[in-house]
Image (cartoon, rainbow, N blue to C red; front, side):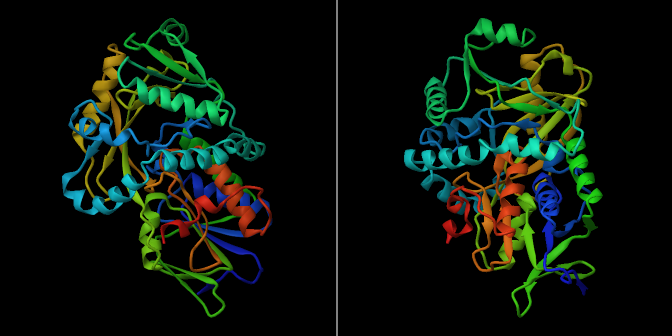
Length: 418
């Protein structure tokens, strides 16, 4: 067994996506001895590599809106729609979906919006702190993010705009000619839109992740490329992480491996209802000059971000677990939607599937485990894992250092599911 506990402050972090890397970097800045463990190298084909690249501090309005349930059947039936189910996975989804329905009340939706806003409001300043030591010039653009829509489903649009207004989120409502002035190359299918001017986007999420990871290593962090099998605890309640080839003993440990976190929490007897939203992307190489900022077409539930790899088209939510193969239909849906807005696009590349970890109330789990004070969780950030990487890292590192955060962290506690 590897004893990492000669210093009082050895921490094992499981998962080298944006959550795990930011947590590890924040911990090492506080003087902890940190070992990051993942079965893959950071940034390899994971959600932190393939996401939309949005830093979206405005994104507090959750999916658990009272009106969503009316829309689900038509979303599932539409070939251009944002939602799909793998039918072989439906029996496994039912318990999660029932919990989700329970969370689709106005009161629950506003609770989620309030507590997403609490951390989203701090998300970009937390990244700015980390970026002080990391050169991200040319990799982060501050041009806002543009949403647009047709004259369908306007009640949903109104609801989102009003909730954001109440929370104090910066937003600029746009008329069609203003959308055209911002992004003249989009086919004018829209009737209205909104610009979130404080949002940013990544030109290459993987490069940013690797720069943060390199900063962690440069400050004395360790990385072990091994698959974690289980966690147990010694007589002093200190965590022992078992990998395929070793045991590692730490003072404290953090589980931050996104959609794969449930595999570990289940073995600890903590039943956290984490599900997997499968998201897809494709690239159109050489077309990134068609738009200057990310755009989202709300009626079809997909987005396009201009990146170094070309135009990255992202979207569609598919419930189908971690085992099902990628769906050609979902890829076709993305390609067709992109061609609808930009008929000049040519052949697409890099068909990618990634896994978003989602809880039925659309709040993440951030904080100590229910059963063990030396084990911490940071997962379930659904579509906002990338945006919330740095602030989650800051919160977890403060909890482990037993510092005050001035935040109400109870809504993110895993206890809410017991």
